[in-house]
Length: 415
Ligand code: HEM
View (cartoon, rainbow, N blue to C red):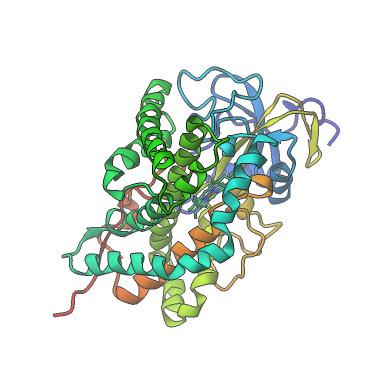
């Protein structure tokens, strides 16, 4: 181990140039190079495409430590706006990025604490329980509509996207009728190779729309989360807009992809699917296992504000650190037979919602949406199957949140 310390470029494990992305081990498994790295050196040096050197953390314990340690700053504009080194035209970050008002996912304490605290009340387990029946209703109505269609249909468009979208719009008080504006633009932030100018243009369109909305809410508050926030005089319009942007984006893309990719995964594991259909009480466990197994929100960035020792390696102050939650959630040191989908696993302690101060604010909401979604879908469509060969399903390898672009499905209609 002495030879790997101090000089991150030494050692026998080849150092990857850029993040390995190719899903060469199947649609649900991490890229094989990531698995290999995790097993050989769970905290590995990594060279970014621009030549800048950082670290790639893939082992469960190490990832958990990184996420728990606030000396790893979140001011890296992770995913939401522009992932540094991935976005063409993005300058090399040599210090924490300037903060974007309201985007507390990319802030550190005390700014992060101040903004997150204003929202915790709106997302408590108790509040989410109160919403549960309504969410089940939203899912059932979409399934009614789907049942009236002639298959094949795209499950993403008809079900996986509308359910979380309708729910988050209603909670925030964003008119669902305006979804063309925010769904198209929010998708643009998540395209990995989107040039910076295009991301900025999409961001501009979103923030113009949301700024008008929060100004209206401040003038005439309604019964929704954005109106409640607008009542806080100390929040500026820019901050309100940033928070609205973050919640709308996070509330859409993540759960939608879990529903789409999760359905694909169940259809590809027929024995698990049959067991789940036979025992609908297993749905909550199946949701936890799908979260672990798929980890659609996989790659997160941090910035070391100090020299920090993790997994026997010294990460130097100023380094960019990338973690893979998917690799961590498939770590054989933590989970038995990690690459098997096992809905009876009781997969506690997994990192799909992150860990530490930035742990997912919407996780109870997401769980309720997924339980309602999968339970309803399986009950209403007992003969659901893919309408195209599995190899032809378009995977979101080009996006920062993984999933499927479309999932054409079919079923036997009652005659
Ligand atoms: C943060 C995953 C659904 C809102 C996070 C983080 C992860 C994550 C991994 C940590 C980011 C980090 O440490 O940098 C997921 C997954 C979801 C999901 C897998 C669905 C299955 C949602 C929903 C909302 C939401 C429905 C609705 C509002 C947020 C927010 C943060 C966050 C606001 C930032 C929290 C902070 O910085 O303190 N999410 N999320 N998420 N998530 Fe989720």
